[in-house]
Image 1 (cartoon, rainbow, N blue to C red):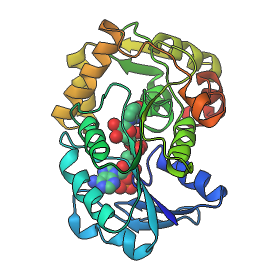
Image 2: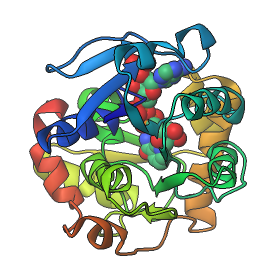
Image 3: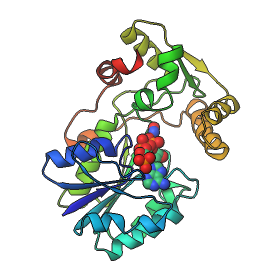
Length: 281
Ligand SMILES: NC(=O)c1ccc[n+]([C@@H]2O[C@H](COP(=O)([O-])OP(=O)(O)OC[C@H]3O[C@@H](n4cnc5c(N)ncnc54)[C@H](OP(=O)(O)O)[C@@H]3O)[C@@H](O)[C@H]2O)c1
């Protein structure tokens, strides 16, 4: 049986694929480029292009489980529903969705996919992680830390239990492969609450150079995202999430989901930053 991973070159699927392969599972990775990485079987797939929906099933006729990393659109349900329905017809039995900590079942964006999968009465699992540590090493914070010694946010002094995508991948592996389906959602949180000031302090210590947290307003952060090519509606949405972290302490909680599902302790920010320090020099 093959497990199909969408979001193939992204921060979770790129870790999940080797993890599954190492444990003897057949894996097929789907991405828009269809690029093959590290000997892992890949195919070309685009959520927004129905003509690519058959590609994964032509590459592997025995797909039994699907890992869903939705496209970055405000309406996520329309494109994902089309492929979920197609996959069901092709015999896929288990659906695991990567959602987000702030999104409950039925909420806009990922929440609508969550609600849809639940309504199908299939085997399922939903991961609702908080903000990824890898945003600092592979996404929006990488260049400002490396080139300017700066971290931009609108979170003010709000704290976040940053989580490693290594841990998210471990939880996803269980949801995809455990014999008994989990049929529930997990809020996936890292081991400690840190503000961006705390992160800047840790980074300064590891990099042996000052890293400053620049506290922006929501409007300023939205503009900062747009300057990097993020569409204005999405930039506004992401900035609002940041503002709520400061004003409503929206991410200030801890839990034991990673330990409960995987049996392992969650990676700390200090360990993550030390392991990745070469990307910021
Ligand atoms: N980043 C965070 O801190 C965070 C926190 C909580 C939840 N999440 C959620 O986690 C998910 C992943 O977020 P991320 O921003 O970190 O991205 P990511 O997983 O690093 O990358 C997303 C991947 O999706 C693929 N993709 C994008 N559009 C596609 C399309 N139309 N068809 C097929 N594949 C497509 C891209 O691969 P190709 O370019 O190769 O196609 C890319 O590798 C999102 O749903 C996000 O809301 C993220």
